[in-house]
Image (cartoon, rainbow, N blue to C red):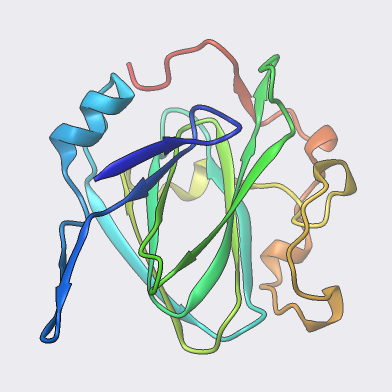
Length: 191
């Protein structure tokens, strides 16, 4: 497994080693010990989730507040997405900036989105299957979001706005500067 820090060092691309031959391939997609050694902290994933979506579906930008904050390890089993993590930690040197990474069945990349980040993705191919691990259970009372089209975030979703398919919830999220329900930089949300 290869780990790559992005322009926001807390967001990490995970690349499994793929062993293939004429029969197919094998890849170890998760090693808790190796990931925690690289990160320097424990995660403890407790739940796996999966969704299937058509091209143009945009889900996000979502997060949960402390004490239900979540770290996510996301990947694509079939198809492809543009996956986005936005730093929403007040006073962080990268506050309001984002990382965007294409995840696909063919590149087998995964993205670790830590606590303190809003997360979203747009589906680039029909019949895309998206899977992810979380280290905390879903909490409706702590569920929050940021507007996917907040111009201050400067996210290029790679699909024209009129072709996007969003839930009603995701069309009504506040802009980052319109909410105080975010995180504080330097606070250990894993303690």
